[in-house]
Image 1 (cartoon, rainbow, N blue to C red):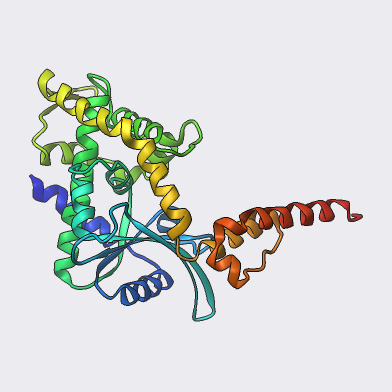
Image 2 (cartoon, rainbow, N blue to C red):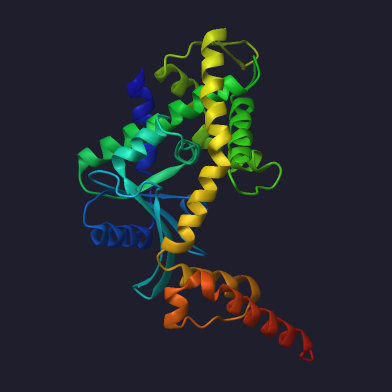
Length: 304
């Protein structure tokens, strides 16, 4: 039955992606030099919109270079007159696969890629197969934890909600209450039927009840083992994400341009990117914030 899950994931990864996104993905792949595939994800995948910042994962061949991954960068590019912006994470495909399978301490990869994603560029057909296997691993890991955290009997949605509530709480970020509900509602087609397939692929037995609910048949030993696996990652979730943020503050390529775009988008105040600000985004932040504060005050004093 594993092939059933991978078949579904393979089809989902080949969902339509707008030409602008495909062109941007190809540009990122060529710049990387050793890219195997480029994954596109986030709300823009669902809507087809080019507004805001596009989200990509560039998966590369060979060993993982950075110990704290992924490497994050920001890019701006105009394609056929259309301005595009992207936040790009780059990591080795082998590391991505291991993280998705739950073999590493990271929680972000399998929690992110059990949600919809699409291949915007691939090196060849073999690349599609490798990425599909890795993303299938994310679904298996997420499903296994979902039934360990969820109720004894419940709907698929009950288990996915339990999963997302736990992973959001473990990460160093703030999400609005009910975020897990919005993920399921806007991606209803993606999640429909995914949990039983993932459980079957992972050899987790379950019973379908006449009410339409599921009764996972985890042994007490397997549940304890899964919860112990999760507790270790839960404890390290926030410290690990803090390390990533600290690393990103000094290695985020294009951080100054990304921050300037975000500031102007949210405040209406343009920020000039000088060579010094480009090289030292953290050191320049206080001066930028002072400039924005003064500009906002000046805007408020202007007569209507």
